[in-house]
Amino acid sequence: MSPPKFELGTLDHAVYTRKSVRAFTNQPVPREVLKSLIESACRAPSGTNTQPWRVYVLEGAARDNLVDEVCKIHDAMAKDPELAKQYTDSYDYYPEKWISPFIDRRRQNGWGLYGLLGIDKTQKDKMHAQQQRNFRFFDAPVGLMFTLNTAMGRGSLLDYGMFLQTLMLAARGVGLSTCPQAAWLAFSKIVHQHIKAGPDEMLVCAMCLGYEDTDALVNTFETPRESVDSVLTWV
Ligand SMILES: Cc1cc2nc3c(=O)[nH]c(=O)nc-3n(C[C@H](O)[C@H](O)[C@H](O)COP(=O)(O)O)c2cc1C
Image (cartoon, rainbow, N blue to C red):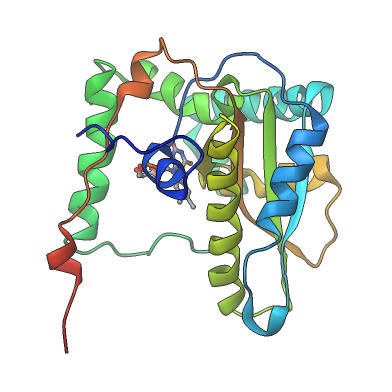
């Protein structure tokens, strides 16, 4: 399904061309552009205007140092799965027990992506390498980390979602692409040290930001959506 053709600069253009990009060029993103995107995201609504977001930008050496450390640990974990016990997700983004239809969509998404790349279940090394692309920010020059004060309630995650989507749509408005990432949650302990977050901060998610590599096969991946009628109940 190709996105409908909307006029550049319209909200619908941003909505329908936003997709998770998993290969970026090395074209840098100027700081003033980055700052204006975060400023747009800050226009997101939040319950009683609590504005619970906090953004850490990693570029250059700061980005590379985090990538190097986490990729090393990720490699070590592949050799010694026991190591994974030392790294726990900062919060339960996903359910402990999956049920249908969510697990089916999750599997369709995962195997759809790996299938496109010609990776099957038996190819553990290739799966590991593709998973590790997450911890290389898919080569994006900018990695973003988002934290929430642990004193806040679950509702703040709702506010955060609006902040993140506003940021991703604003990015499309200036020709930039993104990939939100929960993969980093497992390494929140390491992320915390690198971004020097306080003990009262919880990693909500990460995000890659940069210019899409339009030649990359992985970026041709298209995700379906349920029909609007299946999510809609007229009461
Ligand atoms: C909070 C959040 C976390 C995500 N984490 C990851 C991730 O760690 N790695 C990844 O490749 N994609 C990640 N995704 C992207 C989803 O797989 C993607 O949004 C979904 O398949 C729909 O595709 P689309 O974004 O291209 O429309 C994440 C998306 C969200 C909203």
